[in-house]
Every structure is written in C-alpha cells, then in structure tokens.
Image 1 (tube, rainbow, N blue to C red):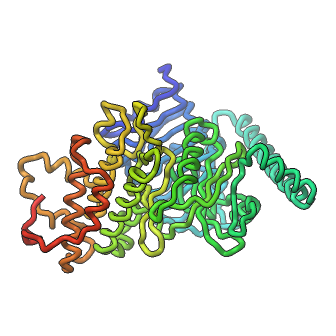
Image 2 (image 1 turned 135 degrees about the vertical axis):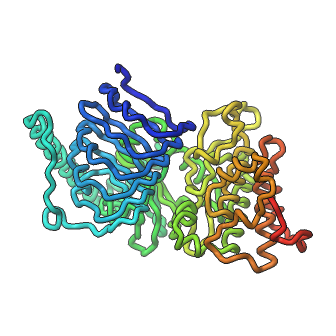
Image 3 (image 1 turned 90 degrees about the vertical axis):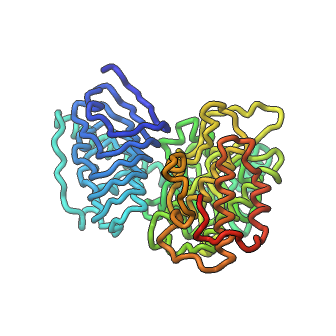
Length: 507
C-alpha cells in the first residue's frame, strides 16, 4: 500500500491488468508499456494519486473508461499503440493537471471532442477519427465535469491554471518581440555572429539560402500548433512544416515534459551527433537542429508516406505496396545497414530497426530514421549496454549478454524483412515453426494475402531470396548470422531459375 512508483515496461507480461492496481492509493507513477497485456483498461477508483500513467504498446482493447476523469492528479497519459475503440470521452478535459495525452495508433472513432484540444501535448494521429477542429466556445457543446471532493480547491486550480497560461503567452509574445528587435539591429547581429563563431552556436538551423531560419520554423508551425502535428516518435512530436521557400520538411520536437528527463535529452543529442556525420540515400537526411533548453527540435527531409508500420497495417496502403516495391524496400534497408556497419568508422549500430523506424517517401522508397538509440561500435571496448529497441525486434542474445554488436541489427533486419513479405509481424510464425505439426508449412501460406498472387518469375525468385536471407539473419547464434555487407551483396545478385516450383517450397 506504500508503493509510489512502479515500472514494468519492456517485459513479456501477458493477461489483463489487475483491477486491484487501483487500491494502491499512494501510487503516482505506473509504466506498463511495451508488454503483451490484453483486455480492457481497468477502472481505477478514487482516492488515487496517479501523475504518470503509461500503458502504451500493448494489446489493450475496448473503450476508454469515463472513470479516468477521477484521476484529478494525472499529468501524463499514454495509451497509444493499442486496439482501443469507441469514442474519446469529453470528460478528459476535466483533468486540469493533464499536460500530455497520447491516444495515437488505436481504433478510436467518431468526433473529436473540442474540449480535449485544450490539452497541450495532444496526439490523436492514426485513428479513424473525424479530425475537423471546431471553434472552441462556438461549436463545442458544454460538458459537465463531476465536482471534486472540494469545490473550492477545484476553483483555485482553474484560476491558477488560467493565470499561468496568460503569463506563459505574454512571456512568449515579449520574447518573440525582443528577438525580432534584436534581429533588426545590424550591429547586434554582427556581434552575435562573432560570438557564435567563438563559442559554438547551439542553434544550427539552416534554410536553403544558408541563413539561420529559426523564426521561419516558428512561423510555419504557428508556434508548434497541434494542427501541424502528424505523429509522435519515441521521444517527441513530429510536425509537417512548409518553409517560405515552399520546401516541405519534417520537424521532430522534444516535449517539455521529456526534455527534463536526462535519458530523452541524451537520445535527442545522440541523434544529432549520428546524423550530422553520415550520408546515405536510404537514411533520412537531417537538415538542421536546435539544441536549447527552451526548445529542442530536429529538421528532417519529409517522408510523405509515413512509417512502414502504418503502410503494412492500413489495408488500403498495404495493397499499394506491391511485391516489387516490398523487395526494393528490403534491399534499401539492407544497403543502409551495410553502410552503417561497414562504411562508417567506427561502425554504427542502430539498435532499433523496426517497421516503425522505416519511413517511405512519395515513391515508396525506404529510409531508416530515428537514431536516438544508435551507438558507435568501438573495437577496444566491451560495448556493453542496456537493452534498447522495440519489443519483437530485439536480438535474443541481448537478454543475457548485454553486449552490443552489429549482429543485433542483423537480427532486427531479418524480422523486418519477413514482416514486409507477410504483411504482419512474424512472431506467431516463429513460435509455430518450433512445433512439429507445422514443419510442412508452405511459403505461399505466409505471404500477404491482401495483394495479388506472384506471377513475375523474377519477382518470385526475389521473394524466395528475401525469405531465405531473413531466416539466416534471425539465426539464434549471432556468429552464424551473415553480415549486412553479405546480405546487401546477395540481394543485388540476379538469381537463376528456381530448382523447385514456387508453390512446392516449404519453410
């Protein structure tokens, strides 16, 4: 009953979340993310002190319970990457302390309550919602929040929140005004430039004419308005930004809540360090960055089709990904990893290769993104590290060796390659192959059934090659896995006619 913080994330927890969790009235921090939890969200009854609640990346379903309105201390709520359905409760806006709400990658439907737009860090992306934003106060129907235990305290909270909001807006306005005046004075501009040259400029945002474009970013996003947000990454929101030149870029901004966490700050700076030193056509290009304690963001090339994960998950987009495009995506990922492992000195291990971190442009060409957990592989180091990555793609040896090698990326690549061919994560397939009853499972049985059958002999040979390479990369012994250089070269070789008919090939 005295437990205050509980973190069980990134494990193999299964089953339902016990309803008794609500009896821990002193529990303020609960993280059960990245597990295999099932069932509906538990009803947590008052009294409680929850401030941080993360149930993301599980298999939770059902509606969002209206009882969440009782969590009047809640500041941070993540329910993304589940299978939640139904509508978004209007009473979420009654949580006066709530600063961050992520409901992305679910099956939520219906109208978006205009009341939730008052929440600062809001992400509703990748849900079949009606995203028409009403004018708050006109189109927004009134909603009744249940009175708290002490009405006086609730009124005081509202007054304090409103006062802080007004103060924050005034501060931003005065800061921008002072910044604009400073930029207009040529002498001060020259001194600032000389000072930056001497001490090192933390702001390295550049436009295509070579000039600093920080103010262009602020203007193009209307100070990072939620309307320009297109998704949420591992540690920040992603915005679509059209610069004054007409060029469209993607901007990843670190949330204020996460910027205070040393781990997120380190990952953000790590991504800058990695991407400023590498160049490859299949690695997302970094155009610029801003590392400041008030505002931290990265500027990337814009990938119009989003993540490979979404492209495979959404049926309409999956059908557009034909067999030839899928083979080319596998080849692109292999070439990029071969570059990181064999052409960079020291080698770079990405450590989080998954379909979420493979991005597609308008031509369905793939690039690897999200280098927040990437590490340099030093030859004279033990390269021991904590486990990082996405559950289901992490090499099994990391669980007991904690030693980072390039073969960890090779394993993750194998999982991704097989997922591209199957159209879904191969976890169930890998488990079933260990059973004697599935020894005669045919290759044609695992192909993505949403797209037409294979007819082109060249494509058929490439699909067989991809599956063979994928299984080789997922070998249980790291030393038995091929290098990404070998994989990249193997995928470039034109194979001869298959010795066995395609429909007669078993796994």
